Structures are given as C-alpha cells and as structure tokens.
Length: 281
Length: 317
Image (tube, rainbow over all chains, first blue to last red):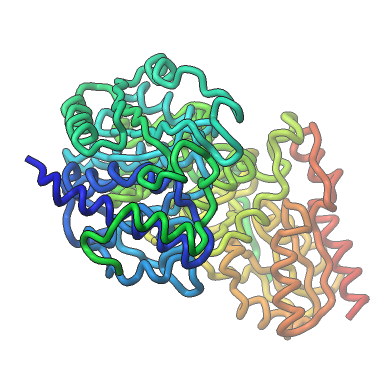
C-alpha cells in the first residue's frame, strides 16, 4: 500500500523544484512539467521495478523513456529525488557546463537518462526498440514511456504505433499526457487530434484512460491495471488526463505557461501555494 | 607498379549481406532491421538464419532508426538497412538526436549510394549523404570500394562501439581487394606508390583510380593511389605523407564535391600542407535516370576523368 502522505509531500516538493529551476534561468517549460508531477512521482516511487544504481543497459529492471523532453524540469527533479544524482545539481539546470541540458541528453552522462529527447516524436520508436531487446534478453521487465498529446502530431509516432501493435510489443506501456494544450494554443485549435482513444484502438492497442491524471491514487491504481494487461499480445496505451500547470492556480488550464518562466513575484505566489515539504535544494 | 586483378565483378551490397550473415553466426548481439528492402540489401540470408533477430519495419524509416537506437539499450548491435537516400536525408533528425547525440551503437548501412541506382533516377539516388553523415559529431563514415572490402568492413564495425554510417552501391563492380584483408576503421590503404601525384579515392572510384594510374604510368607519370574507405575519421597522416612527397592531389568520389571526401582533404591540406587539388565529384547537381555506366560517364566519374584531372593538377604544381 502506497504511503500517500509521503508521495503527496514529494509531489509538492517536485512542484517547487520545477518552479525554482525554470525561474532561476528564466527559461524552460513549467506547464507540462507541473501537469505530470504526480505521474512521475508515482512512476519512480511506486510503479517501476528499478535498481537504485544507474546502468545504461538497464538489464533486470523496468525502464522509462521520456519522449516529450521539454518537460525536463519534472524529470530531473524526480530523478534527483529518487537518488540518481545530487538534488543540489538542480541548481545547474540550463546553465553552461551543466549535465542538466534544457532537453535531456546522455551526452553529459547524467544518471537516469538513457537517450536524448526534445525533437518530438521519437520516444515511442526508441521504447519499442528497448522493449524488443528486453524480449531477446528474456528480461521480463517493462518499458514505460511518456509522450505529449500535441506530440502525436508528428508522423513518426504513427509508424511506431502501427509497428508495436502489428508485432505484439506487449511489454510496452505508453502514457499519453492528454492535457489538450500545446505551444500555440489548444490541440483542438492548432491541429485537432480527433478521438485519440479510437485512433489507438484502431491501430490495435489495448487502451485505457485515467480520468484523474493529477490524482496519485487514480494514477497508481490505473497504471497497475495497465501493468496487469502486459504480456497479452498487445501494446498498452494509457490516456492520462492531466491539467497543464497543475498546482499553481494562475498556471492551470492554459497553454500560456507551456514554455514561460515566472517572474520573482509570480514565483513567490506559486511557491506560497506549495509550501516546503521535504526541503528545497 | 603493383598489378591489381579483378577476380570477377560482384556487387558491394552482396559484400554487406554476406558479412551480415557471417556476423549473425558469430555475434549473437547483432540484430538487423530493414525497411521493406530485404532483397535489395541482400539481408535474406540473415533473415532466414536468424528470424528472431531480424526486424521487418515496413516503409517506416524514421521508426526504424528510433527502434535501432532503443535496441542498443540492453546490449544489442543493430544494423539498419535501406537505400542511402532513405538512410540519411529522410531520417536525419532521428539519426541526429536518437543515435549520434545519444552516442548509440547503431550501424546505419546504406545501399545504392551515389548515382548507382541508375534508371530509378534522382529521387532514389543520393550525392549528399557523406556530407550529411560526416557533419554529425561522433559519426564514423565508411565508403567501401568492392565486395571483399564491404564484407570485411561489415564484420569490423560490429566490434567497434559507436555509431557508424556504412555506404555501398548497387551494381557489380571489380572485386580486387584481398578476401582476407584486415579492415581497420580510420586507416587508409596505399594501393600504388608514385611520386608525381596523389590520387585519393573512395568507393567505386577506387578501381577507376587504379585504371587511371595504369594509363598515367604508360605516359611516364607515377601516382600514389590511396583508398580512403573511412572518410571520418580521416587518416590525416597517410594523406599528408603522400602529398608532401608528390606535391599535389586528385580526390575522386561518387558524391557532390560539396561535403564529400574532397572537402575533407582540402581542409586537411589547407591547415597542414597547402597543395594544388582537383576534384572528381559531381558538381552541385542531382542525378537523373540512366544506366550506372552512362551516369558515371556523363557526370565525369571515371578513369578518363581522373587522368584529365591529374594532368591539370600537375600543371598547377
């Protein structure tokens, strides 16, 4: 049984980490990061079977691949707080000579990151490759991956989605961050996605939805159901309905904070809505 | 002057296919991915012998490159196969982010490079791929000259940890390098010794360079002929040593002069030992339909053109 109080405290602290990282360098992507804080906290602290030490090959553990690399602030915060690298290193986000590039990379040898991402649409393909290698290695662990909903506009995704179903890649759980927003506006306005659930089903995926994508218990129970569906011949898609900017009232339900940092006053306001729990870096 | 014998015309892509088959037997980590061109890439034997390690991805090259990058995580050595055009320009961003920038051990194997797709025309030919690949930090770029060398290179790159672009062609060409050659990535191969000019060639143009050297020899001109199978990293020492001796160089490649081997040599000489250079390469153009031989003639990629360039460059010494 999950210790929800501890996880909730971690979520609040991760929100603070996101806001402070982005504010310090006056750049980065707080909106989508905040929307996925609960998902990342649940994934790394409750759902994945993972080793505490980092090995690039990840044999004998579950692996996660972030496709929408711009939400690096939440990824870095959760990785650091899971013990992959010192939390203080979050101070170097987007700075010269840092391992914490604006978008994640393996180039600088950051523990926890197995592939670069940022140019959108490549994560599902990579995850399929990693999942197939697990099968060849007779390693029964799972591949988790996250992509954005706007990201599905990239055509490569559909090549990958077709491949995974056509070839029974059933050790793969793809979560789509369904927040309905992208840089230029709502996904409905920029390029309507239509019925994403029906599209995945038509491509042969086992699709489920988590309607409360910012609720830890809903995420954990939903993702555990997804895990139970693995190994049945189909790749699994979880549509996670999240609120962009969640946890900061003036950042919620809008694309305005997709790629914009708060000023000093806005930061104070946002942090006051998320008081320190585990301690700032 | 050394004598080189064509032991029977064979295609370089069969060298790749046979090398892959041999690798399949000796290296269990080697996996192969193909985008609906199994026959063209000569990957049938690997597929038949190792169906569990062969992945047919369909006409979806971007996904193929991403999958290959992912398959390295857990220790596999993926070899991707499709035409050179679809192996590079079509998937440049996927190679850039998921393979090169991420430092993944993927072997991008590209057939039908240059003009040799012949009658299919410009949409299926590519004369820019060496440039595209050599500009990627960390990418090794290899262009082999015949069947034996392509087979040896295919086997050798499996033992090298890092991204590799391996380029070869379609038609049957002279097979003249030793079957038992020790292929060393980044090491130039000296084919002829001479004092008047250095001819540096890669790919199908190496045989043409040897023919040119014979003709020149009959006219009293001796040429150093160097086979540059690895364009990046370039064997600077071998090229400099030769040019310091001969004082001029002709570069020959089935590629645009922009971004190709010739430019790499020009940069080396400009910074280390300036010397006159002539380029045998296409002149900033796309290809067109025609037989490979017709195209090589039309675009001036043959022994006669090399002889002409040598005479020009010697006059500029």
